[in-house]
Length: 274
Image (cartoon, rainbow, N blue to C red; front, side):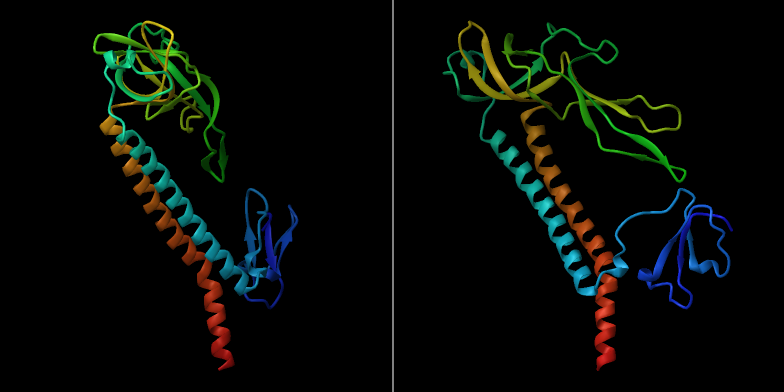
């Protein structure tokens, strides 16, 4: 059989991973095929956990569990903090915005005004972010990388509130919970481009600080989120708990996989000594 793989030394058990050694590409492997690991895509490179002592693997497993749970807790605290911040603010009326001193943080519940220029005719976005990711095929299945931002067009935005128009003056606000469209993939392949944006007429929530100097209301926005105050708060709270629950599942399953063998080895060694 011709392949690229791994071959163990004669007489060694299959579980003795430290005694497996790489076989060059194109080598002819004969004998007990249980002693051969083949990969049509070439040899795999990584950490040989079998060569690591059981106590060290236990420490690695504990650190993995702790790190995963910590990520979940941090995500929960962050999402709950964002929800609490918006919950403390009541949406401001257009007439009150004019009399609010500059620098005061305000929450605006409005709609994207029809006067905004459409930037992408095919999707109707008046503000959007373009993201891309790598897509590749591995052993007959498609793999994808993480999304990364490649283009941002978030111009000053007009929002309509109770018959008045409010200006979002800055062009660096964050878009949250907005419409998302994936595209760019050919037939049978995952999409490699994602567009996230807002359209005229959509309800939005704007968090920012008041600016002065004009007769119309002006704000410097931190973020523009699709939806209402209530939907934003509910979404942030549920997202935090969902992420925490997923981190617990990953910590338990991953920790069990990492810790099972070293704990069993230590238990067997103790039984042998007794």
